[in-house]
Structures are given as structure tokens and as C-alpha cells.
Amino acid sequence: MRKYLKNIVLLSIVFISFIMHYQHFSKDIISIHSWRQTQTQSTINNFYEEDMNILNPRRNDRGNGDGIFRMEFPLMQWLVAGSYYVFGKSILVTRLFMFGIGLLSVLGMHKLLLILFEKEILAIFGAWAFNFSPSFFYYTINPLPDNLALCCAIWGLVMFFKWTESNKTKQLILCGILLSIGVLCKLPFILYFIVPAVYLLRNLFRSQQYKKNLLQGALVFMSLLFPLIWYITVIPQWGGNGIVSGMLDNSINFSTLVDFLTHNLISTLPELLLNYGSVLFFIAGFYFLFKKKAFRNSHFLLIIALSFSVLAYFLFEINMIAKIHDYYLFPFYPLLFMLVGYGAFNIYTTGKKSFKIITIALLFTLPITCYIRMYERWVPESPGFNRDLLEYKSELREIIPNDALVIIGNDVSRYISFYYIDKKGWGFDNDNLTPDKLKTMIDNGAEFLYSDSRKVDSNELITPHLDELILKKGSIKVFRLKHL
Picture 1 (spheres, rainbow, N blue to C red):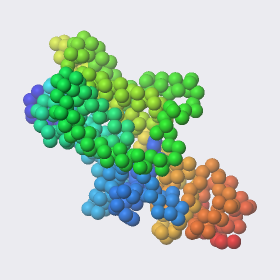
Picture 2 (cartoon, rainbow, N blue to C red; picture 1 turned 60 degrees about the horizontal axis):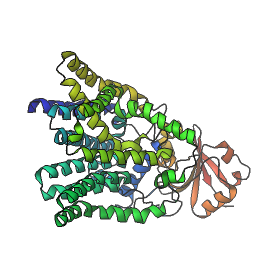
Picture 3 (cartoon, rainbow, N blue to C red; picture 1 turned 90 degrees about the vertical axis):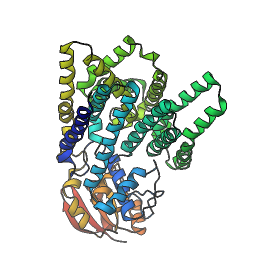
């Protein structure tokens, strides 16, 4: 494939993706997984507004405390907050920052496929298909640390496989650093260390050069020390996080788990992760792996080891992934589009003109089917939470001082409503605000109540604490609170 043609295709990926995302860049956080997105964006905002110490990520549901809450290492959040000092605080800046990370992931996917298969057209096919994965398309402009984790993991593999060819020490060190950053940003990407681990173990048994292999292992794994220290320190503070316990603390019955598995196989995989237009390539990828005896390739064992590791992670977390958490499946992306690229290439090069036409036609349909599938996620009329928060956010933010402590509900997420009113304080859900809780919050500094619950704000035991109604927008009422 001529170099200028390759560059045209890669630039077209950037251009088409930008055009497809253009009308969404300026939209506020809406739709599926707004919970996780507002959590991330609130951390970004708090870095910028309060404290740029990267070790102190803060949430808004903090009462009158400092709000420090450590989960994944907040590198992505911190970097976006830093960009605000240059470009200003804006969801647009966040989305453009994330878009840039997404493009780097696509470029990394192209490089990875090129190194593994040494076929430029295969790498182009795989990168193109990856870019138009519906879920990747959706999340690539949303504030999620998973985006940076995926990008670093892909480039970590690129550096590793480059090292296996060149034996340059700096590439092995870069591999370890990039994979470790991926782990810091999202713990499941620790699975990607299985690739260098299996490679080094295989070489150890083959060559028995213990000193050399131990040195190489130290170079790639030494950077994992900081992620391990971070998670060993912060995980005990999470308190009953289902992601950590997975199936070890499962309360879901077997038939429901089977339903989750089936849904992910027949719906999430073809519709969201792959794109229906890539399903034929994906299936063909398996077929040609056996037909062409790909297991003879020296890298095959490494990819299989990673595949089984990611599958084990999926089964371990299936009770948490359920039918909705498709962003938990980011570690699958490189593996899926290795198969898609391989399948598309082998169909295209069968020698039959009709197969070439089918391949190109399917590739050209990917942006269309991707856009159609994700369009409904960008409709402000259906944001996935109380629409009044989105519609009246300016009024809800401006009615009281920025530094006033508030109580807000109902909001089971404890992130979405705080993000939209841009305040700190206490949250409640399921109408669970008792007079005793309310009094304690007032005693600790709560000055206002935001409520979309008539059961709460009309409760005769609650109303004595309400001084006056200062704003009503849609279902949301804002009250000044008073001490009794």
C-alpha cells in the first residue's frame, strides 16, 4: 500500500470522526453512564478550582469535609484540569482532549497491527474498523479514565513488540511505563502485563539465560511498582466496591448471569463493540486463523495468553458488567480488532473481485451504522436523568453562592445532580432524608435544599426546617434552610 494512500486513509479517519462528533463536542454530559462521566468531570473541575495536587482527587458529595476520594490514579483528570489553565474551564475542552486521546488510540492500533502482521492494508482496515466501533465512538469524547488507559495499553504493546524485533532497551522500558500508566488509570489493564510475562518466561525456559531474562523482566515490571502501591493503599478505602470482589461476592442467581452472558455475546459484542458491519470480518478472522495456521506465528502464544486473561476478567466481573457497563470491556478492543483487521484483509486478498467489493462496501458502511446506532445517546430530550437538571442548570447554579453547602436529592448516583448544580454538600436518594439527618446536616453547615421529591419537601416533619422557597424550576425546588 503506497505511503500517500495510507496517509490519506489515516487523515480521513481524523476528518470523518471529527465531523461525526462535531455537533456533540459542546453538549453537556448526558445519556448512558452519566453517573461515571459526571464523577470524572467533577474531579477535573475540583482539581482546577481547588487543588492541583494529583494525589487529592475530590468529589462533591462530601458534606462539610475535604471530599478527597481516591479510586483509579487520576492522571487523566489532572491533565485535563491542567489544560483548563490554557484554554479555560469548559466541557468542550474536556471533549476535545478526550478526542485527541481517542485518535492516538486509533494510531496505536494501526501501529500494533502493522507490527504483528506486517501488512499495511491489514493495519489500515483494522484501525478504520476500530475507529467506528460504536462504543469507542461514543466514549472517545466523554470524560472517562478508561480512554487514557486503553491508549497507553495499546502503545505499551506497540513498544513491546517493537522491542522483540529490535532488542532496544529503551523500547522495553517504554513498554513497562506505558502499561503501568494504563494500570494506574484503570486497574483491569494490569492484564496486559501477561504479554511480556509470557514472552520472558518462554525465553527463560528456552535459553536458560537467567541473568539476562531477570534483567529484562526488571526493566519492564519495575514501573508496575507505583500502581501496586497506589491500589494497595486506596482499595481498602473503597468499602464494598463490587468491582474488586466480582464473582467472589455475587448475589445474582445463575439464570440471570446466563442472561448477562447471552446479552453480551449476541447484543453488546456485535452491536456496540464491533459494529454490525464488522461482524463478518470478525468471524472470518477466526476462520483464517485456523486455515492459515496462525498458531505457528511466534506472537500467537502471547495474544492467546492475553485473550484468556481478558476473558477470565470478563467472567469474574460479569455480575458487575451486567447488560449495561460496556465501558468495562475496553480491554477487549485490541483483541477484537486484531481479528477484524485480519479477517477483512484475508477476505479482500482472496483474489476474487466480488470479495474485494464486499470488503470495501462493508468498511464504508461502518461510519454510517456507527452513527445511526449512537445517535440516540446524544439527544438532550432524553438525558438519562432528571431533565430539569440539564435544562435549568444555569438558574440552579446561580441562585445561591458558589461556596454554599447544600443538600440535594433524589440522586442515587450522588454525582449527576451535584455536577449540574455545581455545588458541594450532602446527597440523598429514594426519599431517604429524615428530620434527624436533615438537622445534623444543617448543624454541619448545610444552607440550602435542592429537592425533586415532594415526599421529602412536603413532609410535615421536614417543613419546619425550610425557611423559604427561593426557586422552582420544573420538578426541582430550592429552599433556604433554617435552624430550629
